[in-house]
Length: 78
Image (cartoon, rainbow, N blue to C red; front, side):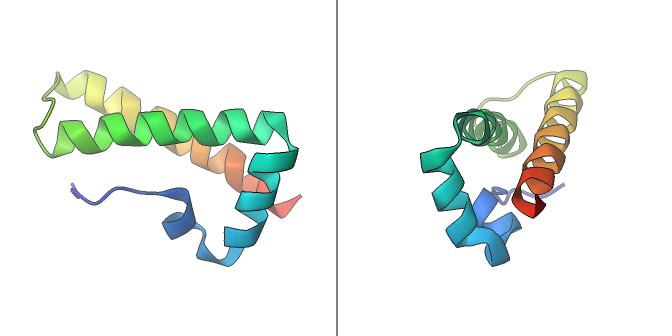
């Protein structure tokens, strides 16, 4: 377990410009990126014990974050 946030620009540094562009021009991508950001923040706060939660809930949030990250990666490569 890591207490480091997984921000999109850190996860995909090679796509930093494309992330900025798609956030502005693609509403679907922008929605996914915002959802990823919110879920990622929740995971980070749970891992840091700022907002502790049930372990199963935290695992489900991590799975959601991974699903969103995969979808975002797919769109970045399109």
